[in-house]
Structures are given as C-alpha cells and as structure tokens.
Image 1 (cartoon, helix red, strand yellow):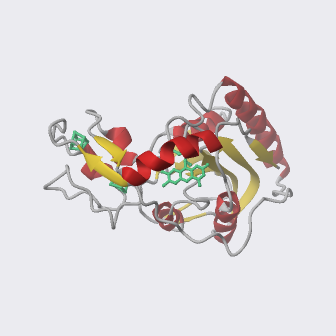
Image 2 (cartoon, helix red, strand yellow):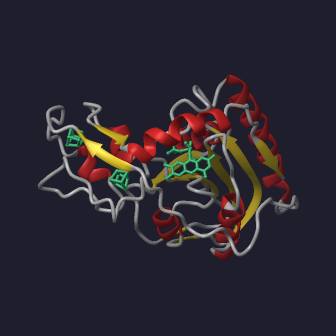
Length: 252
Ligand SMILES: Cc1cc2nc3c(=O)[nH]c(=O)nc-3n(C[C@H](O)[C@H](O)[C@H](O)COP(=O)(O)O)c2cc1C
Ligand code: SF4
Ligand code: SF4
C-alpha cells in the first residue's frame, strides 16, 4: 500500500505548512514524520512518496534535523525536496537536502525553495507563504504527480556549492520572562537540543541551543523571546536588507 510520507523539521510551523500544501494535492493516505519529535530509524518502499521539508538555517539545513533525516532511508522512493527560507538566502541548503536524500536512496524527482515568514526577524516576509505562493506550490505539486508517474528523476541543476558553507551559530540570546512562564514544560518537551533544563524552564543553555525558535513558538504564554544587544542591533538592519519580495523557485 503506497503512502505519502510528510517529513519535516518545522520549529515555527511554516515548513510544515508548505509540506502539507504539497501533500494535499496527492490522493494517497498520508503519514507524518515530524523531526522535532521523530528521531528513529525508518525505511520506505518504492511504492511510497516522500515530501521532505527543511527550513534554511544560515544557508544549511539545521544540523540536528540533518542527523534525524540521516536515519530515514528510501528504496528508490520518489521524493520531493523543499528548502523553506525567510526571504534572505538559501545558499547551499537545497543542494544539501537533495544530496542527503539521494545518499539515503531516495529518487529525488523535484525540488523547491519556498519563502516563508522569517522565524527570527519577524518583520521579514510577513504572512508568507501567501495565497500567491500556495497557488504556485499547488501547480508545482501537480507537475510532481505527473513526473512521479514517469519514474524520471530530477534533471534541473540545484543552486549551491560544495563544500557547503560552514555551520554558523547565531549570537542572539533567547530569554524567558519568569513572571510570565506558567511552567507548562511544553518548551522542555519540544527542544531538539535538550537546551532547556526539565527542572527549570525559564533558563536556556545557549551553548546547546541552536536558536531554532521551537520553544518560542510553542510557548502558550509568549514568555520566550530573542533579546539582547546583538539582536536589537541586527533586527532593523536585517529587515531593511531583506524587504524585497523573493519568489518560490521550482526544479523538476
Ligand atoms: C537559526 C535560524 C537561521 C536562519 N537562517 C536563515 C537563512 O540563512 N536564510 C533565510 O532566508 N532564512 C533563515 N532563517 C529563517 C527560516 O529559514 C524561515 O523563517 C523558515 O520559514 C523557518 O521555518 P519553520 O517555520 O518551519 O521553522 C533562519 C531561521 C533560524 C531560526
Ligand atoms: S532552547 Fe534553543 S534549541 Fe531549544 S527549542 Fe528553544 S530555540 Fe530551539
Ligand atoms: S512553554 Fe512557556 S509557559 Fe511553558 S514552561 Fe516553557 S516558557 Fe514556561
């Protein structure tokens, strides 16, 4: 029985939204592998179809998401690769994702870079993916459906360079307002780096933290935020530099 496998790492939920938009074009039964929670071995057959979405973190796919995706293998399984970014730069992230899927024996048939609301600098790409993006994503999905029937692989060249750009740790501080925190421990459960102690959710180990934003977005009290001088200084400059709309790009 063939399934559409939705596989994503999506701390602020926009990559999940893009993967789901693509998946909804397919009639098959859907299964979900949310890599914020799923960290196990898995293997798919050539009857399945994988839709794999990763956010762009400093020009790469997030390091811990990569480690989790490395455990998921295909068997000539058709795959659609999506690098979802915040209207700044994709750099090598889509190339890295396509390479990793191919190494893991997926047959990558198509790929895309999609633009979404920036999860750190929230004045950038507000409201995206918007209806215009979603329409383009639907058109792309229909082309993917037709292409999968032919058994062909991706032929377009994917932008990016090897070796990929080095991982970069952002210098911004994540803080938590202890007067606002309701001690629900949702942030502790979701943190992929175990950077929030389970007996003290108002602190964050910034050496372990990847600044992925999952804790900020899950917090029901809005107690967790980026803060500090480096962040406040960078925000207006970054938002000005990235205020021109970029478009989703599709590769078949
Ligand atoms: C640590 C970190 C690094 C990021 N680096 C980039 C980047 O290099 N280029 C870019 O355009 N957006 C970058 N972004 C923005 C995200 O790629 C973008 O907001 C994406 O939609 C987040 O996906 P999510 O909603 O699934 O978490 C970064 C976000 C984070 C948290
Ligand atoms: S503490 Fe850091 S790594 Fe953990 S969820 Fe928050 S931003 Fe992500
Ligand atoms: S998710 Fe928010 S309210 Fe819940 S423990 Fe974490 S910081 Fe506190």
